[in-house]
Image (cartoon, rainbow, N blue to C red):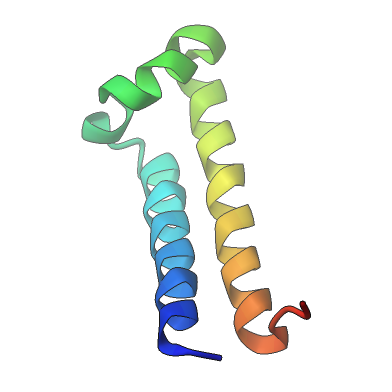
Length: 73
């Protein structure tokens, strides 16, 4: 793998970690932002936390799986 691929995987893992930690800790700065307010309005705060927690787990899993197993083109 090239350096740019490692950078993309690191971004996946980092953004997934932020999303997961924000959903677990119920950070106001995360759920009151303009981007997440759409989901908070539609799903409620608890539903948005669950949604962002699942997205965080998926991003972390994708980053780790691609890191260890790579992808075939």
